[in-house]
Amino acid sequence: MSTSSPSITDFLIVLSESKRILNSHSRHFLFLSVLFLLPLSFSFSSFPSLLSSSSSSSTTTTLLNSPPHHHHLRLRQFTLGETLAVIILFAGFALVASVCAIGSITYSVFHGFYDRPVKVGAAVKSLGGSFVRLAATLIAAEVLVGLIVVIFGGIGYLGILGLGFEYGEVGFGCFVGVLGVGLLVVLMYVQVNWGLASVVVVLESKWGFKPLARSRYLIRGMRSVGFALAVFYGGFTGLLVWITVMSGETEFGGGDEEWKSWAFVVQIVVTSSILTLLLLHGIAANTVLYMYCKALHGELAGEVAKDFAAEYVSLPYDDEKVFHDTSVAPSC
Image (cartoon, rainbow, N blue to C red; front, side, top):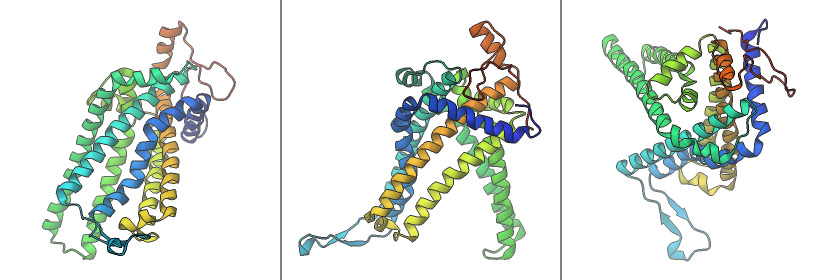
């Protein structure tokens, strides 16, 4: 991975290698995607619109081909408690689906990296050992992220009070904008440094805050690649969800009106399918990045030596099976 532009080259190699692994076991990863990622993607695409529809003011709709006294249907508005309950249920479902997807796909990509056989049964069975650890680690990470957001919120509140800004003033907008950019930079830094934590949980059996520290150590020298992957996959994922929500509000009337349109339903299906592919490739690329980070820190050769009694590892840069020395150039 040593070239004049190591960051771009390493990024492309990670994408290429992850794609090779997925293509080599396409049926296997298709099954896992349909089982775990597709429901998760559909919920991400549809939940904002469903929540908007249920929490909007009551509307009157006309039912075609119904008796006159049934022409008008009053849709009940959700109470605050019901809305919170729906959000909690969605968060719980998203957590379970995410943990199952990350655990099974990471396990499979790891074995695919070494060209070992991958089986659906073994991948699903691996969740028995990693599910609780992954859930605990994700919750721990979200708690720390929440604390960061609260700290920035406190700084913003105290700053507005101390500087005497009024809502709508230019100074108020500038202050909030600067604070927002600062929060975004901090969150991106955290994401890059903790990006390998889920892989560490699955492959090294660590959990809690330890995988976060381990990820921060491994990503050294490859932060630019981690940043590129986060922007590439995270940016496209966010863009897809945003387009779906905004199109539902602007083109299909928002609220429950959008769900009466076949065009909107088709858009949800297409968006969910694309989002499933993005999530699958993102998890695979993250696992491959973990392997190259271990190689950069001199850990991969020893691991292979332990398993195969040799100081070499197969890093297939192309379709040919050629054994390469474990050599990775740091990108930052």
